[in-house]
Amino acid sequence: MAVEQTRSRILDAAESLFFSDGIAVTGVDRVAEVAGVSVVTLYKHMGSKDGLLAEVLRRRLDRWRATWEREVGAQTEPRDKVLAVFSAVTAYRDDSTPAQWCSFLSTASERPTDAGGGADPAAELVAADTEGLRTRLRELAEVADPARVDEVVDTVLLVYNGVLASLLRGHPQDPAGRAREVARAALGWGPVPG
Image 1 (cartoon, rainbow, N blue to C red):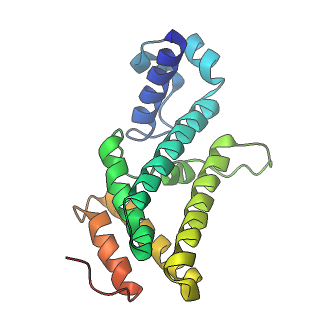
Image 2 (image 1 turned 90 degrees about the vertical axis):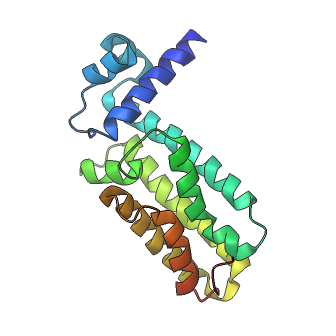
């Protein structure tokens, strides 16, 4: 139990610091300090700063997927299941530590691509997040609008990415709610249900 609590404290500290102060400027010594552990303990649990980042992203990805599935499951209409990605963003942010925007986009923008072709678990998780979005939206679109699957996926992803950028900018106040309306209109799925 103590090992799991220590691990959680390290991940909580890293998540908060990485996605508020920045990955590159946050040293493991600062993460260890905030977590209340020694740097040796941090390395024992995470192996490296890259390992720490990968674990933070893995945990966030698991939480995101569970939140999205819960929001999809709350809908009865196939088109609303597609658009549930937007309510999932709001629900996820309500349940997560504060961050300016998407931790996966933050990671992708802060870290250079490894030109050496070596294993990069954080980059692999960023790719998994993107592929997971596309795959799940495709599955939902095949039921909701089978004649336009690619169009639905591309439209929803484009609007979803706009939500993430709006979170960084801080405007509009409820980008996910507005995005749902925009995606519904762009796809010609009728007026927003009252």
